[in-house]
Length: 190
Image (cartoon, rainbow, N blue to C red; front, side, top):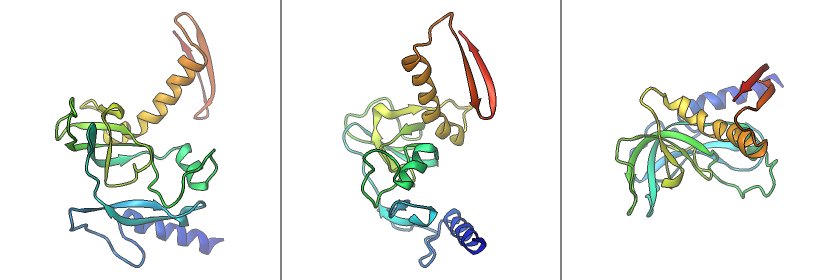
């Protein structure tokens, strides 16, 4: 067990250093390629590998984002383990949320300029250096919000908002008790 834990820790360190175990990829020279984390099959961390993928080009109505931070949440873990309804086919690049800088936009894409700081929802593929996603799922982030805050904000905020205001139908004058939220109790009054 200790050996397995040590191997996982070493593999994680290699991923952080942006290298593959047998094929260092410390710098991507070809601008037509990018690094991405690839889920090769369902299971543990050993199913995640850093690999090279073709650089995506934005299609009409899409925004191309240079990813600075990507989110990791419960859904990502469930996908990695294959514990969701209708799991996707592997291999795939996981991840549903990211933040970064607009690198380019597709034709007929308005509202974003190169250099804009944004957060985005993506249908997988967030765990890559670059993503392209429809502009309807891209949002500018405030200057005082960090990239990690923006990447963590999107999925968590939307889930909480939907549960409170669409599922529970919370309205002005109502209150709600949220228990077990990060090991604490929260009371909201509207």
